[in-house]
Length: 115
Image (cartoon, rainbow, N blue to C red; front, side, top):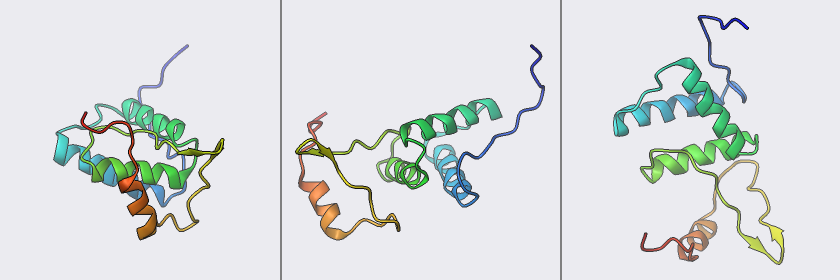
């Protein structure tokens, strides 16, 4: 097996997604002095984002925005709350969160308080 000397990053979502990924890379560079060392490591980061977002572009964008808003160094799956054995319905198509949803998320204990 021969490896190609050059490797380019493949965007796994729509063309509009790349702007969010570029913001993530800029945030990582400015706030955490991190840059991907190669296209291969950047592709691995994108692949991980696809995995933790279950391939859902809007979920991937929410993951990026949440990590930046919380000054996190990494990207983490957003765990859906369970109620009566069913998962929480998907967000509206716009991806916008209402004030009531934000408040409900704020007051709900997560089990990670004080860590």
